[in-house]
Length: 333
Image (cartoon, rainbow, N blue to C red):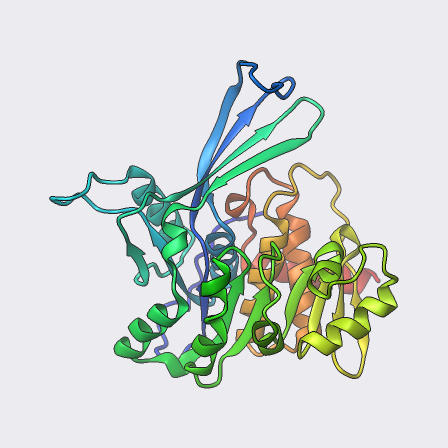
């Protein structure tokens, strides 16, 4: 399986569809432990890989791997200036994004440090994650929209994709940004559920959540029967996609519910970032002209492939690998 995001057609057609992703950029640091420390206890850990993270960055990488021109609207730490020391994590994040084929023109440098996530895994496979938002707290969709309008070419943006990692106040600006992008479909992966803003949810087409997030966003108990969640999701969003892990996903429109399966993974190495692979691939497929069901099928394939390698964006497959497994899986059914 090739993880190269490069598509031969990228950059050769000024009218090619664009996915704009408005979301966070982090650098993830993994630490291995035998057991988690008790309060006040010091333990020795093993430092693992350090690399690109943040749901915005991950989903932008997944979309770019599908051969779609992908813009990331985000923020990282400062360059060296009279007032600031350089932020080496910002340079690392930008370099990795570009290696995945993401256009980082609209990733701004601010005077806060690049966001970080510290992921601790114990010998039993459990994890504890600590996130410092840093520069991500400054990401304003309205400000991003002004920058895009000033540059022109927004008519080629076919999908605006966002997540739940912006501040609630900034998330509330997303419908305005979507309205300023003519012809753009607003896809919201509300993970985590940091807001239940009614206008934000109603603008989503689709709203992407897992089963627990579906209950949280509709303010229903987590043991609510799925059929009842479906009706509540229809009430709060134009359409919805409920991800079901290895079982695939449910696509919910105002008239129908359709389930799509996920190809089984022969050996699960790491599920980190599989959900982001799903959402980014779905957004890219919509931009390429797929309907929502077909886009979800491709997203499920991308998520399955992502579990077969370690890491998040580094585990994402190429468009050719995704489409090959998609074809093979359909033929085998």
